[in-house]
Every structure is written in structure tokens, then in C-alpha cells.
Length: 85
Image 1 (cartoon, rainbow, N blue to C red):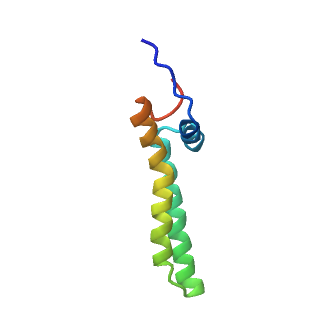
Image 2 (cartoon, rainbow, N blue to C red):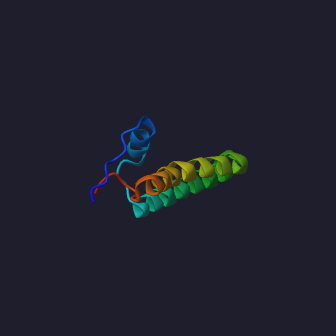
């Protein structure tokens, strides 16, 4: 049975945001960005004497939404996390 791929605007936008990445690639990207945000926080605390804890929490939530919501929506919609067969 060959499923026809949906072609709506929302679906195409989700596919473009996910860019064909698998779950593990999204997890690795999320870990790298969180690591860089942590290093930036250490730099700001030690050099600039500024606390970024509130902003850091918001940025981590935004990055998590960017990396995990599109593949979850694609998985629920099509049964796959990427647009590749």
C-alpha cells in the first residue's frame, strides 16, 4: 500500500524546518546548542559578571521546541520523522 504524502502548507513547513534530520540528529543538535549556551553563560558570569539564568531558560525551551516539535508532528502525521522514505 503506497501512502500519498500530504502536501499542505503546514506539512511542507514542518518538513523544511526539520530538513530531513532524524531523531538522533535532532538530539545531537540540541545537545550542542545547550552546551554552547552553557559556555556562554559561564563566560558572562565570569567575565561580564552578568547572570543570564532567566534568559537561558527561555532559550533552552525555544531550542527544544525547534528541535523536537517538528519531528514529533511529522511522526504523528506520517509515521516517519523525516520526509525521506
